[in-house]
Image 1 (cartoon, rainbow, N blue to C red):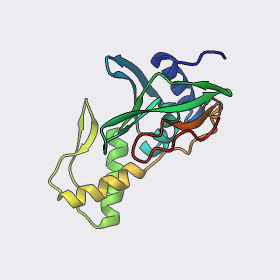
Image 2 (image 1 turned 120 degrees about the vertical axis):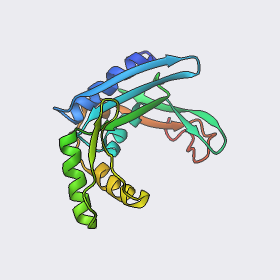
Image 3 (image 1 turned 45 degrees about the horizontal axis):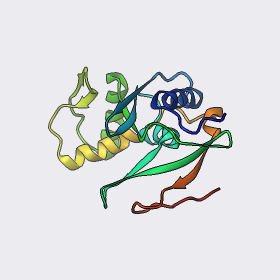
Image 4 (image 1 turned 30 degrees about the vertical axis):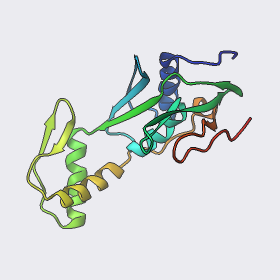
Length: 182
């Protein structure tokens, strides 16, 4: 591979492949978007692995980072198959929603764990299942932390992900590391 820059669409293909290999049987929607300030990829799925598991896979393909402390958008450097490459998506966003059946079961288990009364669960076409009844903010937060930690599967090894190596960043943002490999 001699190409040094992958378009957002080409990056999305790699993300799709890595997710399919990591979580076989889970259906992911991977959509790329290019706009005047850059490009991003949106990954959506229902149930399946936790947000953190999916984010750990897709973050390897992010071509940039954002430092909110200084309002700075920086660059990540990577290699693909040993060749330096710049991924075309600055950011990759992960959106997990729940089926009403799984969400109801997870909320019931969390409520039982904390000793809360089972709330009313509703379903939305846009966001999936959600807690519809009155719970205090703290109760809802505790329940949702337990719910979001649920994962149906552990990640399998991904040949596509193994092709990528993080080489560092531009070193300008807060917490930036700079180039860490040649």
